[in-house]
Image (cartoon, rainbow, N blue to C red; front, top):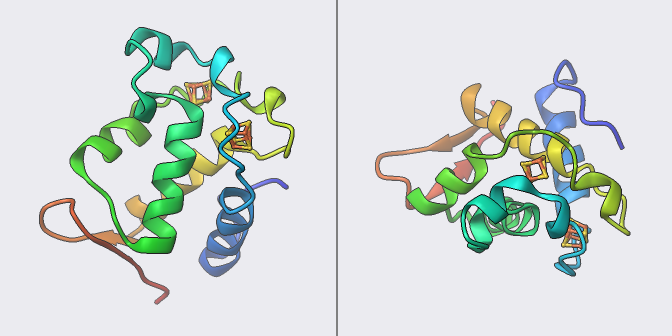
Length: 120
Ligand code: SF4
Ligand code: SF4
């Protein structure tokens, strides 16, 4: 599924959930990722960790400063995506999450310890 930023915000959020909630956390995507290697294999700097962090944000409303650093340090290179057996559009999901945050649809209030997906 393609997550197109010109989609309406409700449609974009729906598509993002469809992508992220299919993740089985198998880790096949991680070997191709340049940032997780650079970060000494800390989970939040790889595709599985980033998808998991977005999952936590959307399902539990939880985000930490460390998780934001992970999500925002993605290069959006897409090297991970072709390795995903579930065909999750990983880089696009990360880009869509960041777009939803920057447009205020997913709000991060105060300290980044709690977020609330908001559809205006
Ligand atoms: S390969 Fe796909 S299903 Fe497996 S952890 Fe990565 S994103 Fe999730
Ligand atoms: S798109 Fe992001 S998560 Fe995927 S391989 Fe590139 S840097 Fe890693």
